[in-house]
Image (cartoon, rainbow, N blue to C red; front, top):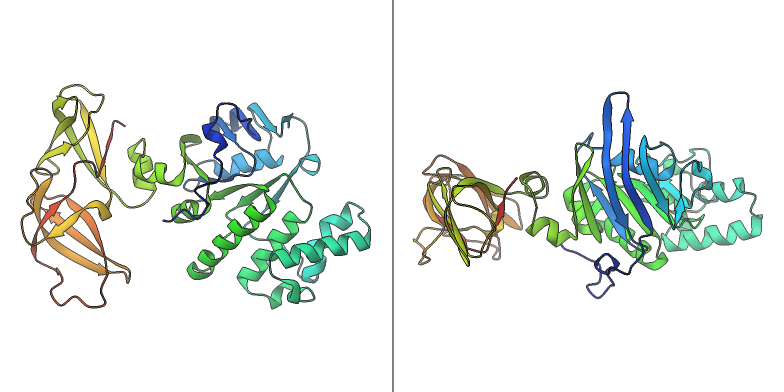
Length: 379
């Protein structure tokens, strides 16, 4: 889950002086008695590639449609570039929206599809032709300008839809599951194309997706949604390594979660008694908690070490039986039943082409991890 954006890029969300480009303030959307979006407040900054991440029905597409003007908030306020969007129809907003279906006109050429919005606005043919040509070069489709959509691959159609959305030079581009129709390999390639185009043009992107790997790869920041609410906002490493709840930990990537109660509470460490683990969990830093408080400990599979020999570490060591080994190419996934009965997942990178003595099914193994490898959760 790499983060391709330049680490030297400015991060306006860290500056108290920075002014948000999109400001969503206490926005709620109801459909009858159903609350689709529930009291959402969110600031997005100019030039961001922001991802709204969540499962089906969590409210992310409804929030996007309110930004576009296709839905009206029941309560709250939306501002784009300092302007209140209340009462402003979609065609007068500084936005454009790209749908999952692409919605290309099948009888028009690529060039005509991209030019459609400009011609509807009354732009002169010569100016429109030049702008379309520039945009087709940007998305690397110049040689396909005369083709019809049915003569293109899925990835090429996706880039036509992107060019059509960008050719009008919106300040804000809204993308609803833009890569959902592509196969895995093409989706990965297109993700980097999206990043390149966004960074070249400097347009602010807001992308809705249910794919956590896609959100991790694309975004400057992620807003995780659940049941109409934004439950956490952060940069991809923050969301992955420091989730604020069991929901976020479980939704973003694979995770093992152990329930426990605080049995020791010291300034530089705490200890959790966990029947699920079959022992105690040593957390190598202080945590704001009280004795006997119920907590949860989340640890990612790649942070767990599996070995035949008992590790020399003092803490966070248990035994179990390997029930399954899944070979995924770049890594192997171990499904291990601990002596407590709980099943956990551990992963190991396949650094060599062959391992003649690799751990296999039905082996007794030791499972361990460092005391700063996991995260303590209170909800």
